[in-house]
Length: 489
Image 1: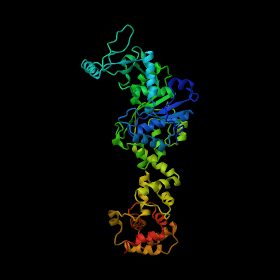
Image 2: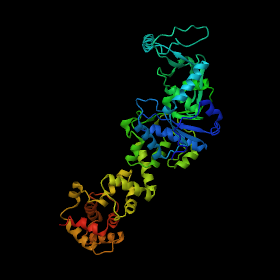
Image 3: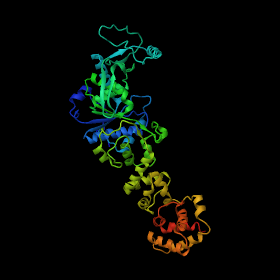
């Protein structure tokens, strides 16, 4: 699945950007950069899909980067969950996965170069000082921000370096003018530099911070379009200023609005699956999930159903709505039902065999699973439902007591017995079975359902099924008569 499955750190920044023959800033290069602090959720999957599709549409390259600098919260299990989710969805990446924790030496070299040229500086303010400053500012109704105590300026005398304080490194942000960008989703955004303080780019222990690592990675990896959630909008002006300080080409930004749940509230665990892989567990086809995600905040005319080849041909950033998208489980189920109907029987057979195995059932050659699937897949919204619906073909039917009481009456049993005698003597085909039932119905002056409904309960355990003659034809003559005779003893 993976392109150049590169896990090693890239070359030094300047060498990579200016001398690496494989990178050209004329080539579209997008990235998906999740933090492995949890599963790949729906919002992240949509971001990955849009970034992937934009690269495909423009004959570009799609990079996977794992932003694992949050050591306390990042876990190998979460990394694997992200990789599994990407693999299931078929979002193949051209490069990566790259891991930020493997690139610490690169970040530290860049930080040192910034210290050397004066775009970054050491700050010796203690935590206690900063907390006191924050409290004072809040009491005065001011926006909490660093006061620039250690910021070097022309003609300014810095304080004496205190003993026993390990300094952080701060980015020397411009204090005048504005930072602006034309967001490909939200339009023109401008932030006054006076609103941005000098953020920390390296902690006291020397480890770089998130915003700084992102900047170096986007620069080194030649990212041309950054497509991500709008929770990153506040990070963007800081990142643009750092990119400018590094002499980098600033990528275009497209910030996707949040996804709301069915109830209009921010999508969260209580709205459904925690992980994209949970949708697989719950019986959704990846084609349905991808098609649904593609329509969450993007549209192509009135097109509702399309495959990923069509999506990549149509996709652009101009038709992404800046307003929040609302998740609609009913719509997803409708799409899933469509794709179950369209799926190849070979692929369904593999999947349903596995789901039946989880129910403790082994698929036998008789009845043939493909015949069963052909009969039932028109009725299913998800694959778990499909597996559950057809389980009775491979196990004794679990009779619903209410259906049995309603339909298997003392009055109907003699009719069913007469029918069983006719069924034992016919050529076992759906047409012949149907004719046998009709004959018994006519002889007893009954309506067809009066016989069909008890047959359904005897054979399937419930009163709903596809055409009963087709069910019986697939179930087989021997098994059909065996199940009927259990009620005639």
